[in-house]
Amino acid sequence: MSSPSLRQLDIFAQMVAAGSAARCAQDLGLDLGEVLDGIAALEMRLGYRLFDDPAGAARLTPAGRKTAQAMMQLGSDTPSPAGAVAAEAPDAPAPPPPAEPPREGIILAAPAPIFGHFQDALAAFEAANDDIAISIDLHVHSARDAATALARGRADIAYFYALEEPAEPPSRYGWSEPLNLYAGSGHRLARAAMVGRDDIAATPLLAMEPHNGMRQIVDAALARARLPFDAPALESDNMFEIMAALRDGAGCFAAFGPLARDLGRMSGIRRLALDMPLPAIEIRQAVGADAARKPAVDALAEFLFL
Image 1 (cartoon, helix red, strand yellow):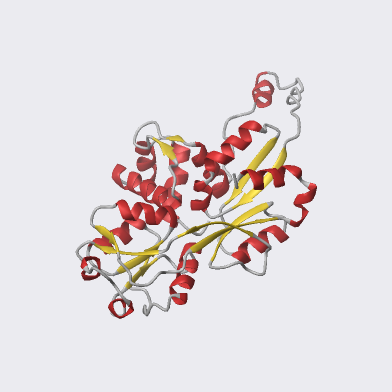
Image 2: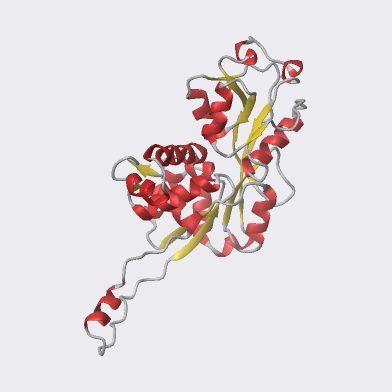
């Protein structure tokens, strides 16, 4: 997954393995605060919680379990019952595992913040259809990503970011998320009653790293709005680093979706009052060409639109 930093993913993976923030900090040689800050930054980026009470029992939320499976394909370290029987009686054949009815698999590809948008709907669909297993792929961000995943069978349903309806893949409009610019509350632009293109011309831009899927759609939207930004003064997927730079008056930052929502609630950070609208980010849904042969895929695609 390209969105979070590798450090945040390392902390998340070790937190899952360790079962507690304190043990994770010990294993990684970090302070407890660094571990909790890393998890908080990752949750902010994704737009949903990964752990219940991360400083305590650190139980994965349902969305956290799905994210762990999607990011790292975590396996179980628990010995199987058959292995335990063989250890007690090596000459006896292990009993066959109990037969389970086959479950139809559906692969849903979406950027992590979009997954956060409908995680409750996914849980409800799985609860009502216990013969269906939904897997999550968090690598898709653009129309090109979605088209490739659907064509290669890596996804049955794909959600992606766009500024308008693309030629490929065939898709339908889900919803739009406004793009906004943010700066530290002490920045001259944050104090202005109205901000125009000329005001922005001399303002440094803070941005996510170039490979980040959200960065790419933001760059496309800023270019369409003809905002005169130079090369970013800071590129980072660590949102705490971005927030600190904003509060220090280092420049402005463009965001949409859950990340924009969270930034708007942060003390010391303010949304700029622009005198021009910025392009909205469309969230679009595409379904694989063979969905007609998979009634459950079509049913889930419709359910997510309810």
